Length: 247
Picture (cartoon, one colour):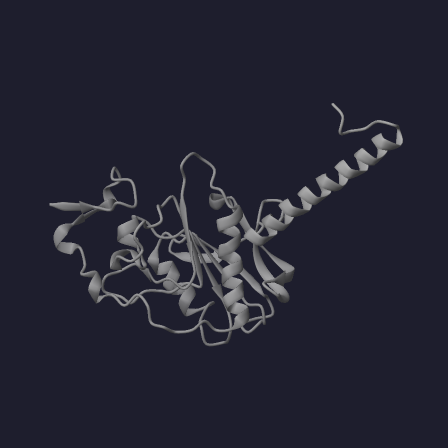
């Protein structure tokens, strides 16, 4: 007897898990209560997830994705999870009941795949983002892209490091990720009241993906501009002796 993951295509053979191998999810620690590193790091993670929720659409009908920060990535029942600052997994359905223990974290055997991308934000020299973590994520398998954002240059003089999985190891890559039709770029500006240099998602032309607030501000600006144009047109018509209120 087998169980089938409800999160992915049952026609794919790796979705079948023998019932005797289904783990007891109560044994997994999914929340440890540790705080994030800093106000900057917290905002940077929100900025990345915010823009994808607000502006990223996968090409193709009915495609869904999961974007998360500080959520455990379980890739083995016998090993502790990795906890990416941000990860992106394409073509998976977000859990409808996040309170169930087996949906409180990202278990690769439940979703049938690893995330496509992991982003780590460096806040000190002790995280191993360019050494141990780089090797750990490569061992998971299936994480095509690995991005390290080092805003204070703790690890090197280079702030942004992008890697692509080649075979079983990561090699340096461009900041455009074709399988995801997504890229990253640096951006100077203010997010949630904090002015700084940030890592942002962008399209192929380097245009950043807007956050929810930015989209709302753009819509408001367009509405105000349209209203202003209407007032100018009305004034011109009245100057010509035309009453625009008359049919």
